[in-house]
Length: 176
Image 1 (spheres, rainbow, N blue to C red):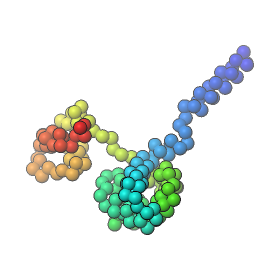
Image 2: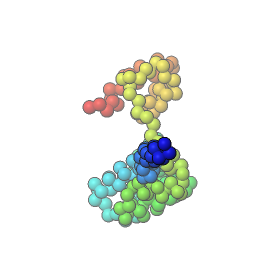
Image 3: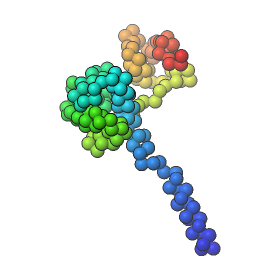
Image 4: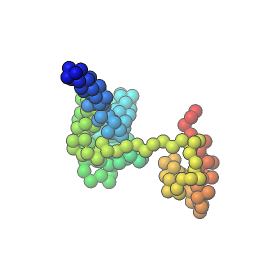
């Protein structure tokens, strides 16, 4: 009886260990914005065939951050790559990137410097076909329009926002 109990506990421990995420995957999940933005940035540098020096990378990072919005802009702010940033830690990105260090490792190091960097998450994409716009709050409708770069100046009531979103939805739907 005791032997079978020990075997059961041993199997339970083995199964529990296989259910936990790997150490590296936890960082990828936590640093979603950092990993995705810096990977896109790194790929764009490779496509441009830019000389991978820290000064060139910093110049391109600052240029890329001028055109970001939302959570990516917040990441650029934390890195010091925006004009209104209070601190500047861009060298913590540019130096390792010039040595082709994997983006995941760069984000792990940034997390140790500023925890906020890894707390950024992208907002969930809204499926306009299944969403009931009439049941959404006006602030959520405004957020949809803002995400598209649109503003409703003549909107007085909620139905005005709903109608404008339905009118503009084909222009911004990505199901081509």
